[in-house]
Length: 114
Length: 113
Image 1 (cartoon, rainbow over the protein chains, first blue to last red):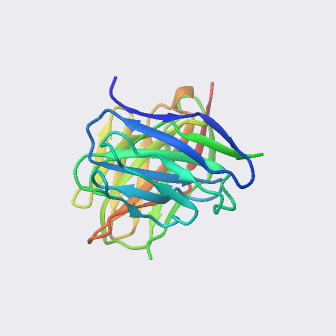
Image 2: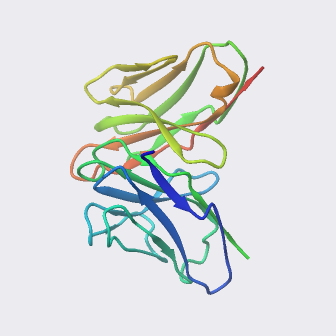
């Protein structure tokens, strides 16, 4: 089955802790994205990557970091600097140049703060 | 600045009704517009994509129209079914070098048996 997987489904973070959300795709897509979804707000772009070893900040990158060491993987780290991390995090991918083609989404990870 | 608004925020209809969801955007200079579906606690699924040069797209019981001059798109769902219950999101892609998606808040649809 081709698609995007995200893990874990639920993640709990303690104060001051860094946590990493996994995103893997087997669609052979070049571009990958991370969004944050909060009640009452539209999806907001955190980071995106066009190719391996390259990534760009989105609209709300502060307190987050990413890496793109492999084409199929784009993990997101929520650092202790992110003061309000509770949200639903969505990973997506698309063919070709970033922000041009239809984006395909993973099932999401819900992050909660203990 | 491009803003995307979806009305109504929530809608409850009996099974079998034809219904229309609305999406409006403030800047008509768009590259394309896309409708997505999101089930509770799940990711998004792309339903229809309309290029700026197109007026409508159809997929099964779904029909999406685009009127750039008035800054509006509608998603028409024919003969609604309980399985259509979900949140429907509209997203606009701008023209120019920065084509990031600009998202509406969605319409939460409940189709009652």
